[in-house]
Length: 75
Image 1 (cartoon, rainbow, N blue to C red):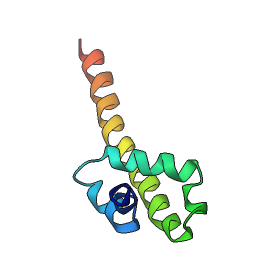
Image 2: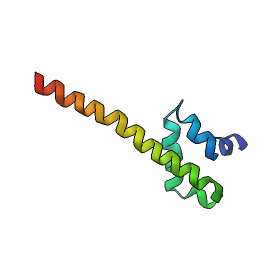
Image 3: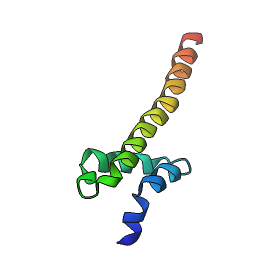
């Protein structure tokens, strides 16, 4: 049980998200489900992970959408 809690810690979930981005989505899920009510110290890290997930998603989807539109317009 301590390992799950340790992975949800402020620094760990944010930093490990750079190696394994789905961890940001897991932290976002915890943030939405008000996990930080159990331990208020988690709130900044979970919020940072939610913002990182949003930026990562936009950074992946925007170029993919642009490439898709560009490839269809050239065909």
